[in-house]
Length: 429
Image (cartoon, rainbow, N blue to C red; front, side, top):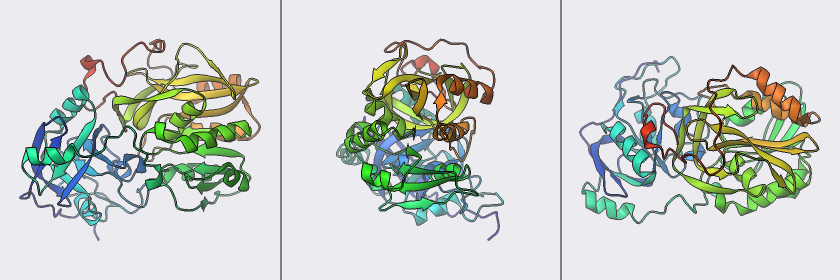
């Protein structure tokens, strides 16, 4: 098949999108026809839609693309982050009529159709995004069958919300899978799959790590059975407040003295294991253009995000826990949301996590050094000073001198409505 294909989507099929507060948008069918429901969220990335759609963290969410042109590079067989598309639905403004890329093997519309993903196009996504920024993420329905707004609204209101949703079991592997180290094997890591993306074990394998991807139901005995040098908790969908079993496992891991690294959902569970709470953001952080500051070096990274929940930890002080001294290592410069945690014991770094995605296949790659930091920690410990020096060497000069707000002060989840931006929005999962 050539890298340029005409698109088969039928712009004559009407479709409608209805939000739970009653606002609705009419458009045309994109992808499969039918009806779908989920949580309406927006993603500000201008590229990387294939990685977004196949990210298990988007399970049961309807994603609105803020970039107006979607599908320009078609769909290839190399960039999927999992075995399928996980979004519940997809909303775009102007789908590409003719995708063109040397790796493209079919159109985005064709892939959505083949996987039964209902979408809608020709929608004013800017107006829709502004509405969600002002009102917050909410339940939504898309249909080519029920075109009466009130009738579809009644169905939307029957759907469960994201708070209290335990979705990990839907996305985890059924049994252990092993990703071999590339080259000489240096370490073994037990990775708890809460919705892991393919690029995460790939990043570890490149560093000589053999990764044992364990189901979310794994016990401490399962973890110890692989004789790991470190333990990793992945990203994933749903409310972290429901993951009690995984939090208990993580606390056992910390008790056992195993080095820990977590990403996204793994950051939220790390927070819970250390005694902090979690809360739902107004509309979340989703996209590949989120500025995060390292609070030690004051360096800034541009990072990829996909989270609708966050850790409620104090920014103005460290916290003593049964496992060591815990502190907030990173914050989002848009809203001061906690974006990273560190745990030290006897001046040694024994665990850390970030809320964003250093493995981001679609970029940016500012934070991929964190995998090296995990390696360094497994090599025999990293002191607080060494971690600070490493981050200082790896980063560019600070892009902001803004002081982080103390805990509880400053807007949460983009509540400062004067900062409305569609291509570089504050929050997003």
